[in-house]
Length: 162
Image (cartoon, rainbow, N blue to C red; front, side):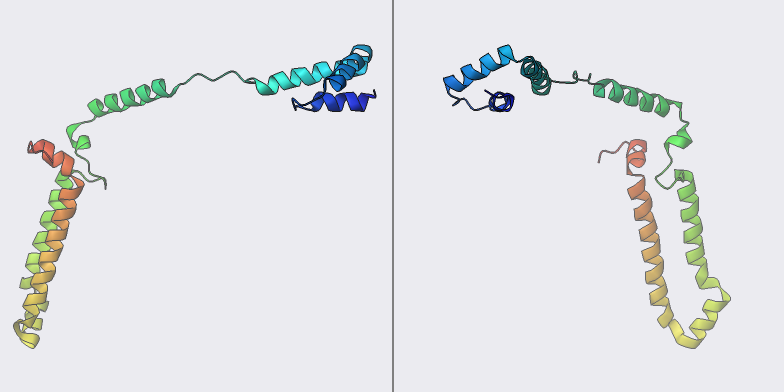
């Protein structure tokens, strides 16, 4: 038997290999040092590929998540009350309220300006309805945005459940 034929038999994985061919391969490998060395290296490589080459790595997910939880818990207690009440946009509730008061004041005082008086003289009171609608939409939108962005803080402050 030639070396190529013996190595082809080694590489075959079928169980239907005839006993005669298998016996001839075994005798060839016993007497051929090159094929025996090749078979040993093939068996080592095969065992490495069929078993886990790298040992399994430890699972650090629980310890990492616990560290993140502890860090967030500690940072929450370190904040002042004003920092805890900061909204998504970076304004505190006090800032939102001040901005809302300025907005309402500016929308209400537009009716007392000189320009509004000239417009009502020219167009009459037909300008009053659109201005009232715009004022209502702006105030309602601002209030909805404020309450929606501070729902958790407001429910905690007024002891409400949502």
